Image (cartoon, rainbow, N blue to C red; front, side):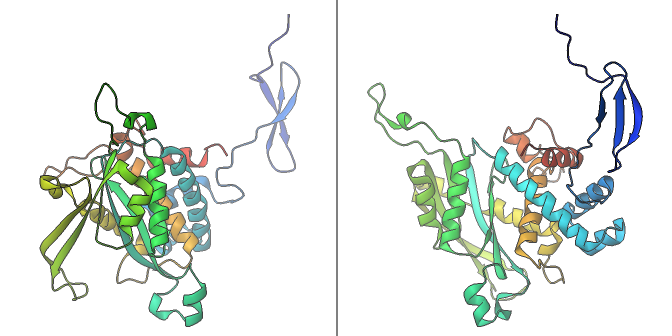
Length: 344
């Protein structure tokens, strides 16, 4: 008979090793071993509970310096925490956002800047630097579930539009090629899996056609405003022009809209202090902006609950719950553990 492996349940202390880690001796088999505590923050020596509190405050819209004054963590350490946690959030979302079944995706870009505004760049910087100046947050949201399946941060170019739409396309559940063939004497044809709405920017039609082809309905909406040249003043919308590019006509034209993704832009400016307008807050490095937005995207999808229309104030389930990616509304602690303890 082969004895089962000892699980070291009965143990006694044997001091600490040179790294300060606790040593133990098993009372049953006599083996000496060390408990290696997991290090979710890597080599950073900041207290775990303080780091978690600081990240929670940053995702709730506090600035870096206000978080520094509240928690006592140096702002340079906070930036390193943002990069560490935000990068892990992006990997976490990349692993989770696959095989999605969404109905109506709305796309938009939100302006911000890194280091300095575009008008402040020198001629050489404009020609050689891609990581400073005006930067756009490319986002999309599903109208029904409010899920943000992907995002991209970069210049407002046709190439980035193609990259972003291709990335979103890969995350949706596609029908098998055989499903478009004729069956039971019925006429064959492609079945649209999603509807897409964008504004009238010229780079979108080619990108949508490249990424989705015949598998998507696509329409554009152009909103007309009165007094649109007055900065920081509320503009009055006086009309809209909807155009069906593929598979949308008749009364379906009224389903084209970008109101939900534009509302998401407001949520982003509230929960990310670096996006606040008319303040001293802005990103000094593109890496920090990408990590901070990765934090926001993970928190928004799994922890945040949008409210139902009207005055009831009733909350919806989280976007991940409505998209069948989670069974309950996650707390920030649960998100923190899942993101930093993921394999790889």
